[in-house]
Length: 133
Image (cartoon, rainbow, N blue to C red):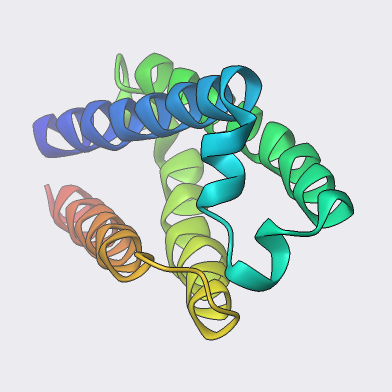
């Protein structure tokens, strides 16, 4: 269970860092946020506003999930279903969305894809290992 505890803390910390930094950048420096959009969207005021609205929701979700992961790390044995849900999100939501964003022109998504695959694979592996214990 120690591996799952640390997996929850590390991935939860990443989620909190990502959520808080994304929230702060889009809230306090919208020009910087717009500069990170694909060129076709960066010059379109409506596209920037829509992206920022979506970003607000996504960053709040990351913050909530990060906090929940820290809470779950206190007793990972009771949080196995939640951990499975997080592993599924890593593989079937976050990785897929980042691949789509890459195809649509977003830059620098490959390192994020690698992180999501790493988080999903290690979470899956640690869940399987603790089942055997």
